[in-house]
Image 1 (cartoon, rainbow, N blue to C red):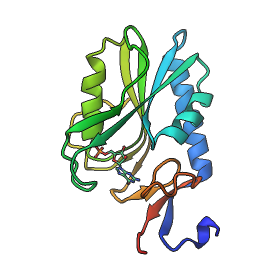
Image 2 (image 1 turned 90 degrees about the vertical axis):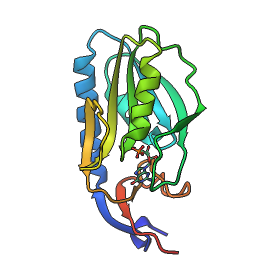
Image 3 (image 1 turned 60 degrees about the vertical axis):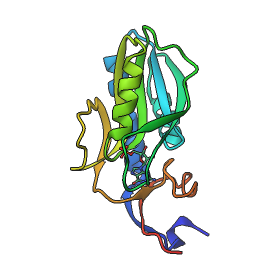
Length: 180
Ligand code: 5GP
């Protein structure tokens, strides 16, 4: 079945070409900002995997990759702000130029926790690159150096983002309508 025929998918929120163009722009900006340096991209599993693999190829300075997996306590709609590290990084962050690569920032609580945790590990610098940020609902103080798109506060899937592991390979970002 083609994606267009899927009744659970709503409108296209960010199209394939828009994604490609913006990821290229973010890569160029990062390459400029980190000229002469090596960056360590830290991907937050699993949602960021598609984004990080495209972003890494759009960056022209040397790139290292590492991954961590986190889960937040509480339901999906009500983040508690307490985050558990399921898989930690392999890399030692001491003196590294770290960019945390996130799929989507909603309340910002996950990212807020991650930033506090990672900054305690002595990196040379620490920044965030988030593909999507939901407008109006970030209530924590986040320093988002690189943002792909601001989107309305609705549930989206695709380009790494899932519903119960489905839709990660959808090549664009779509509104998820649900249903059976
Ligand atoms: P936050 O802590 O910022 O509220 O939540 C961030 C995490 O919640 C994201 O990394 C992602 O895993 C999940 N999330 C938030 N909004 C969405 C959404 O619209 N779609 C999907 N698939 N996951 C989301």
